[in-house]
Length: 401
Ligand SMILES: Nc1ncnc2c1ncn2[C@@H]1O[C@H](COP(=O)(O)OP(=O)(O)OP(=O)(O)O)[C@@H](O)[C@H]1O
Image (tube, rainbow, N blue to C red; front, side, top):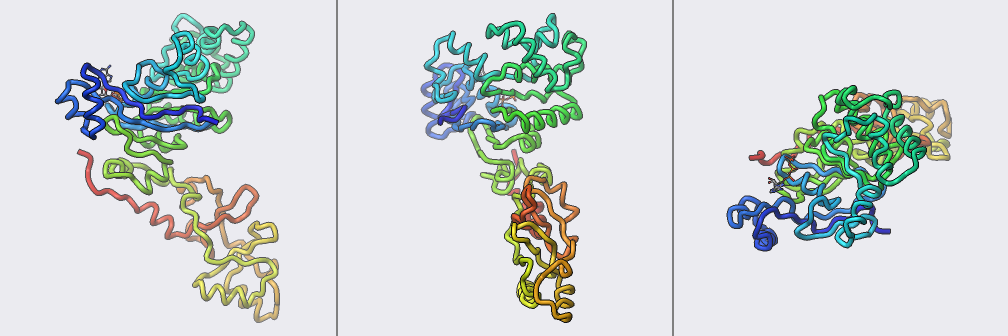
């Protein structure tokens, strides 16, 4: 199966002397030098990636890095100088105008920073717009638009005009329109950048929540790395039109590709990006119900640990065997770990939880914080050292000039 969106070698030069600019770009010359020599701007150079179904893929870069150009190349609002864009394996260059319009309407729809709502139409009509263009029946338009408006929490304003709504609400209408269109890929070009910080956070929350329910395929453009880290399954970082790194937020934070990325990520709130799963370590030892207390006590001594997770038959955490209770069990002549040897001297957390939610639990118990799956089975532990390492590893080597 081809990816929903496949991009290969995508390049855009603005200006005459395109071929010469491409040649110089291929030789690795930077944008400024190419501009000086040819008068042409290398807006985007040699960008490749594939977005899988249900993925929220973020393109992140500062002003001028080529984000807007890239997103317009993705639905062929502008023609590439080189490279291909494929939607579900279909090369966009092979389409005539009518086919391209259909693809934009049904397969790959765009949500802009300023949502371009139609002022004389109602919220519902705005939400239904793509369906109307597509020739859907009035009943279908209404049904899908109302579903989308309800999803973004605006159904009760369906009869209002855009001017009667706040900025945040208008943004929701734009989102509802994109959802109602139900296209394969949503291109979101800095959709929240013009909003106040608090409303922006609300919209990010809304998008996260929608995404967990609907799993849309989204390409999300932003210049805000915290937003990128918060929303993106993967992030492509652009600089001067060129890709500098592609990876998950934790990957980029832990192993920045160069000084530029390192410098950038040093400002990110790592406690919100890194999760328990990212910091997971193999436990030094675990015990099983029924093990001999003497054996476990010796193993604790070797591992220099105060306690061990004790797991039941099913791998779930039954409790913790602590050295003092094991010693007492030995003294009292008990031969197998059972409930009397176990204490609830531990805390556990799900692998997807960010550090900010569990940092207060780290180092508080006889055993390191346990990471468990949905059924309570132990996946690993997060020792205090892992948290300290992860939060202090800020590999800044140079400053952005
Ligand atoms: N139509 C155009 N003609 C000439 N140069 C252009 C054109 N569009 C963009 N550029 C140039 O291409 C480069 C990339 O611009 P682009 O707008 O894609 O970046 P961006 O990352 O979206 O920036 P911003 O966040 O400021 O919009 C810039 O140097 C810009 O000046």
